[in-house]
Length: 331
Image 1 (spheres, rainbow, N blue to C red):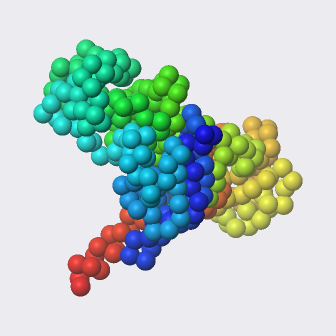
Image 2: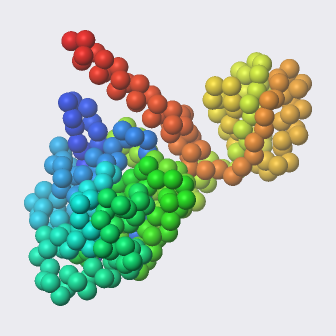
Image 3: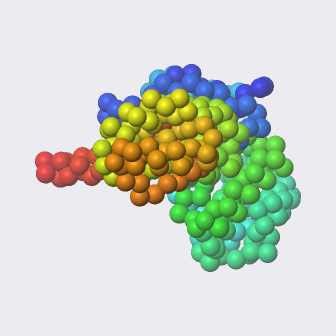
């Protein structure tokens, strides 16, 4: 079996709206695959369908070679899942949580004890195994949830926003554990995230989602190559439209994106072009308040395909949700 996951026009509709809209993609065995996008893009809904928690409206999917509609039990025995929200019993110890979970999978006592020792060592919680989970830090709880998801040796592990709400240092440690699990357990990992740097660091391939659709899918490097060149950000004041027209006429400027009072330029040899850009701005009566040069990021890729940053997408959707709630309350 080459593919751990394969979908064909996978769709989920809620109240007439497509949360997931005809997704077709495949994930190879042993791959670390990311679903990247803003909140509300359809990432969690996709995971819920693949893990049989939600039934698709239409389309089909196979996980570990089993159909999510007709072979639900086989799928569930083949996967592990770490939910976006904590799902541990905080009144039990770390070991007791793992023991209870492994019993649910019908594992015999000796097998349970050996496997619990293995996964506790893997996530470096052996010395805290007898501590009540209510006394664990956020990062420790996340690591315990990963251990629990691996207890029955699944072929596919789903991680839904695995570092949500964690501080930067703890988040980076969790990244290291995810890499370690993928390599040492030879397990296929599918993770959802809206953190660009997380997807870039972890994933072999990334599917960028927006409004229930995949708008781009490739390795992080190839996705960033789509942008092309270096990215120069200018914060300016003055006739932005006229300045933009002048920039578009230059051969070494590959793309210009206007973003409020900022311009995002994709240029060849950016470090050599900055003085020239400032001179052109001055000649056109444009004030340059700041200049920034960097290599393309996945944020630039998202902006390239959607015309907005991922934060703007989330902000716009939050505003729409508030408006919907307000209208319903008025009714």
